[in-house]
Length: 392
Image (cartoon, rainbow, N blue to C red; front, side, top):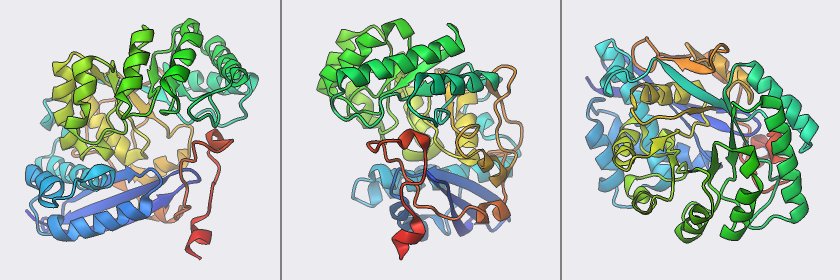
């Protein structure tokens, strides 16, 4: 079996763009891949086009090790975020083809079923003013949908440092969320790598009573020295890893025990094949995985396959119930969180279990949407620029 063709479409929303590829083989089997690139969609599209012509068209979709080696090694230049994301799109689509050709869901090929239910937590839900009462009301809507966990960044446009008044404001928002969701729902505190070590430690002291499930990226991901200081200053779990793209990047964090929960994003780390390698690394150091997932239904379906089979899995991030819920319509068979227990069910359909709806994709052209983290009001996820204007 050989890959004969690649088709690509970019679906736009106010704050994100989803790059979707479909590979077609000479056996008539198709496979889907999806990446939400952080603010560099044009760059990713160009990389996919260039690398597909070089390494994908004419290849056997089963030859995943060769595909990864070609992009990571044979290209000579280090792949980085863009190369690893392009590889992830190809890899995901190949796994979809492999599963379909064998008539099994992908998780059966990753070690089989470790769990029947995959816990999820909500993100993208706090699209309102940074007012405790507003956010409290939105938080009640999250638990009403069955979620047993939610994530929030209450820090506005803070960068490096945060004023005392803004720290108090953030804390009041978190207290309102805790009052809304009760003592048993997990609150995951997103810090987006904003802070210096000193500022992150001050925030960690502030929030102890909230009992957050983790502190996520308290400092810039590459700042091992500051993260070490934060680790030594708090008993709260630390989560990180969404901006790590290769296995070797985890080494200092694993060896020093600086991170408790790794949030590797398979769409930026070489796909399903890439994250399978990291499962072994994290398991060897007795840590757990909570994959970063900002994708639509295809990327979510791929992460779900991994979660079903992963022994050291914790919880899967999910945006699509609150940010752009129309993305469910982009495919047939989109994964959904069960409102009874806040979990995804283990998929049963072959491959990734989803089929592209091209007509729906065409309804949502590119927007130029991007994450504008250090702009006031970013959490409302409104348009920050226009793709049409940019192209003109």
